[in-house]
Length: 370
Image (cartoon, rainbow, N blue to C red; front, side, top):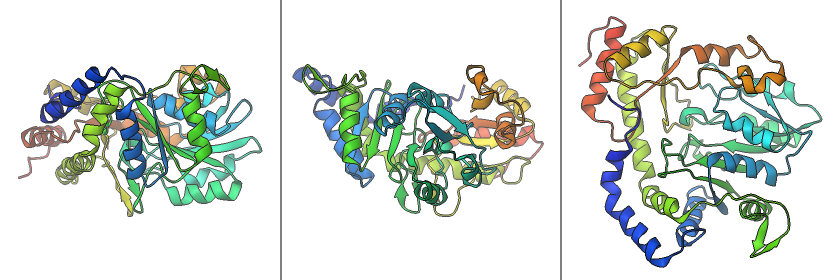
């Protein structure tokens, strides 16, 4: 079976570097908030041309603590997208706030800025765009809206490390940018991990306090916080990979270019890359009204295929109290019936790419391309 992502082949290239760092950690006995975490925080902040980066235990914690540190609380509303992983809305709920959904753009599947202002109320405190699948949201429009209405903006960059909008890294536009380092992400560790990037010193200070039980000094607690610390082992892995992330993303873009060429004449909707955007292809996602049959054909031929996401958030059982039914967000609902992600990782062999393309073309009755 051709997997969606093959972590083993990447590990084989960097194994010796990772093992050297891990041996140093075990020799030192420093496992929590040690030199590897500090190094990673410094380097990720520099990568984004920002002042601060804070390592956390997961991407979900990154969203939650960023919102908490920004002052989001009970009675507040946060505008976001219904087409994303459930953690986006979980983080809002953890703060006691309410998610307000707006539909997505038909091409990028990112939050549609044209619908945002109609949803703003006196309770609205923040925008939470998601750079879905690695394509940046329309940050020009969303920044204008946030500034016009005095709203915070917390970016969900979980799928988009290294992506940029008009030569500016995602995560650097708003109050804070939030990352997940879950193993399947385009920039990943070998467990759970997350990070917040920001240029605001007060955000940095409070997130650092919140991640460590509300404490800045040992056994002195100024508020009730959480246990959300990126450990040294995961930071070591990420430090090794950070030097290679742009190359990894370029390799993903090369695979995507091959897919685009092979599928351009088929009756499917391909991912877009808007002018001024740098897509990093965390996922390569096709859209077809024959999605389920195509998925079955791929699986039958030993090719992994996954639906991200089969149920938009407003139709999830866990959010039934929102009272939103079918038809509330038609673009997101239509996408959920059509999207299919196929294997995408930097080291995907040329022979596997060719076989995947041949299988997809065969499904639609098209001859192989040379």
